[in-house]
Image 1 (cartoon, rainbow, N blue to C red):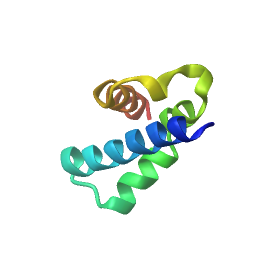
Image 2 (image 1 turned 90 degrees about the horizontal axis):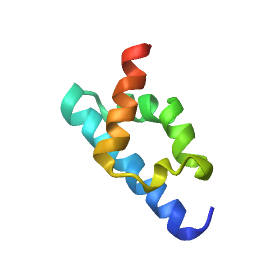
Image 3 (image 1 turned 45 degrees about the vertical axis):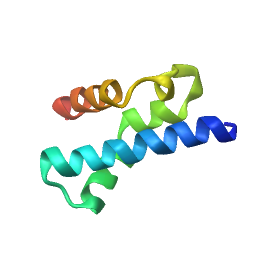
Length: 70
């Protein structure tokens, strides 16, 4: 992963955490646990999926769908 891709993944990750905190009233630690232990985060870090290149809203929707299945 180059610097640009790393930046994009990190930015999306922080946006996911912030949105979980806002919408689900989670603490930062709880939101980080949700994100970092998700399949969505794994997909973000797999450049072959292209997920890191999607909008924050789209990636959040992917995470929401994943959380519904748990």
